[in-house]
Image (cartoon, rainbow, N blue to C red; front, side, top):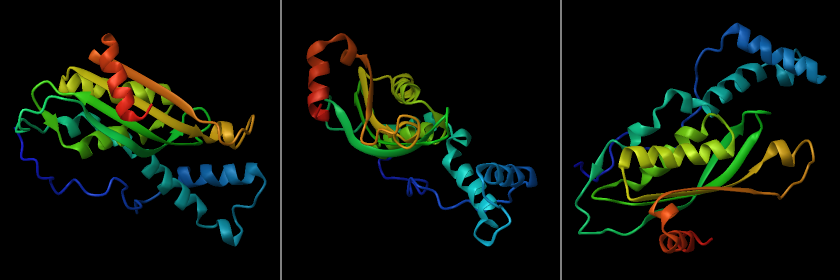
Length: 206
């Protein structure tokens, strides 16, 4: 059982810009893309763009260097006999579509029914962001978050609902702004018991 107080690594979810060296081949690739798009990578406004873009993508995809399960390793049992649903609503996240590398912007509701221990609530958001900061599809992101909580907390039930907009649809292609996508994954009692599923969805406001 762990101390509920947050540890020093529980800072802001958004990391500062990564001031790392950018390999020449990465910068050259971005210059090639700029040139192919119709602009001049040598003009003043674009001179530093390859380095900025490269560092931005290193930050967007920092989830590849992170083990989401690590955030669920510390749990505690002193909850005063509490044995009902734990729910974190409307957690904002940003990801990128693996098909067009365009932004996915949305929110997630994450709930679980603990068996005999719980985890700090910020850890649920950290699990979400560890998976979101990778090239993704929303369906897989939803499944990965739910499966991680199910496997490592071993609760009686897990429910994850994600709602997001996809720039690959709103800003290109069919160009349909305002259209959102909803995905869900129910496990344990939330999948097998209709009453429990209705209860958690009602708490989520769905």
